[in-house]
Image (cartoon, rainbow, N blue to C red; front, side, top):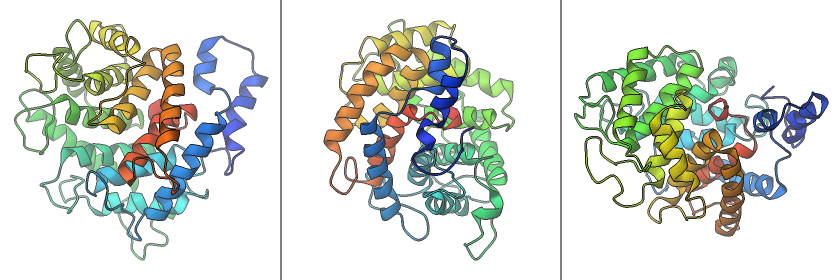
Amino acid sequence: MRWLRSGSGIVFAVTWLALLMPAHGQGLRIRTGTPVPIEVKQTSEMALDYLVKTQTNNGTWQNTSYGQGPGVDGICCLALLSSGEDPNYGIYADAIRKALRSIISKQSETGLLSTNGNDHGSMYHHGFGTLALAEAYGAVDDDLLWKDAGKKGKTIGEALEAAVKVTLECQDQNPYGGWRYTPDAKDADVSVSGANIVALLAAKNAGIEVPDTNMEKMVKLLEQSTDDSGAVAYQVGSVGFAFGDSNARTSIACLSLAIAKEKEGKAFKATIKYLSDRIDQPASSGWPYYTRYYQAQALFQGDFEAWEKWNAMNTEMIQQEQGDDGSIGGNAYSTGMSVLSMALNYRFLPIYER
């Protein structure tokens, strides 16, 4: 159902199907959605055009607020995939293939997705790069992926399996069962861990094996980092949960627990209440795009009515921030994150399924 055809008509395809089926209340509405608001569609299309124009020939994006590498490439690739256009023959197909080739080409021999193709990369880059591979797996045709590249590289499945293997190995050697900036870190924080947890959960949903023991460690890490108010600590094992703005960390924990099917747990209920009670508060001034990216998904997974209200406010803010060139925040990273914060209106990425 996801890739019905290229062009603007795809936005309404699932909605028309919903009209032909018997009504089953809000559950069906959440799964299929309503017609995408025109302001979301126009803003997203301008932003995606900007990403296509600023992508380099080798598939990466440069001059972003977070440097360049598989993490930024993964975020921009996910934004392109989230449009619902056919990823193999649609208007963004070439850009998607170039981004995926860039991510795969920078995979080290051990499987780490890094900026320089070595084993000393950032686990942020690895996490978002792995997520992009997981969401592209099964949707992007491997026969077309390398067709115009002049060489033959790994398939998406091969690269994803190798990336997941590294992610699990890093978690297994970490005393907290989480992740930090470097692959061999012995401490952990919720932010870096969140990037890799969501990637693992997406890979698991795609059919890649993730052992139950690793799933249990993920859930334990998030539960231990969450206090009764729903505030989430930055560094695992630290104190002072409510120090600073917890919206991003709470959103990460809430989303991860939802995808891990832990909605009946105390930690999930605390985090979704924390977020639902604060939907009218602006995102952190330091990391607004990062916060909105996770907050959109957490609210959608946990409180649909709260998400609807927040989504309208978020769309208005993004419209105000969008430049004449289509960028949001002035660079590829912030533009990609902003598109993804609105992408629940389309609901095409597998990770967005409830």
